[in-house]
Image 1 (tube, rainbow, N blue to C red):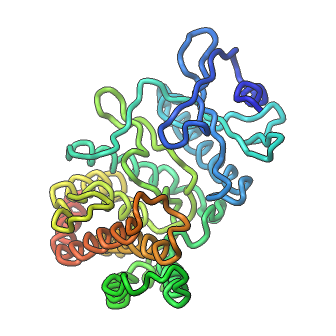
Image 2: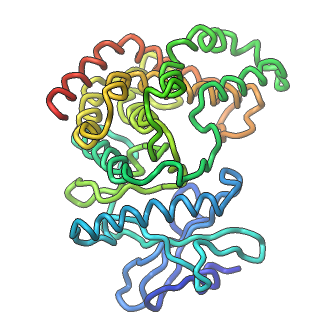
Length: 366
């Protein structure tokens, strides 16, 4: 079906005009829908990635619950310009949260937030602070919604035990005949399990609670206005129950790394402590009244876990013959894994300083 025919299935409140492709990596999957009266973009039409998200009803159930909760709280707080600061799931004419076309492809629609921008690369500590504050506010806003009401959209997404089991399976299978090229990386993984499992063990012992977490806290998942103030947290596909460390750790991993995610020169890779401080300050300023003592005291460990877990995922895919991640050359996933492990190692070296940063921020309330 053409995009316009799909748009016709949704319950729009006004006439629409042009429907145009939007986005770099998924240009044929996402479309901007223009308001027929104003000429401004009003809606975002998206085809849901069924490879990543098997249960679309669960996915959209989570997103609808979360977006509705956020908007209700904004209304209760007399917030202004709610449609510019929050996502809204646009229902179909049949009052469902998504439409299934004749090819069994699933489509959803959101309001489009005009006059917004994203930062793919963070070089300014003020942006790191504001993005982190937005993610922290997201967690806090959802703190009175029971995590048990949401389901896992990707089972065991950040479960380090499960990720290591998957890696061990690929090491044993060695179907791509690559284990011999990855021995140093495998040795590092095997020697680092104890410290990298700190957060999961705290969770298993019940010392840290499940919360509703975003689980993909790259700063380009925050929309900013023209004055670089945060508007809205987007890309809610992975919102589900998790530990606060998941959001903090992935945000730190992607915003405070001095190198690239696939940097072949490991000397480039490390944690920028000024960026770490800025992100931590923003996040704690929004969450310090919510988080318990154990969460705050263990938050720095997330800076180790998240590059480690991403390295494990890249290494697993490398050994599987590059089945999941797109690669540009034969050893791309191995290079990615080594880069992430280098960042995790730098996190170990700077762990005590990171703990002190968070402790000072906690005492000063962010």
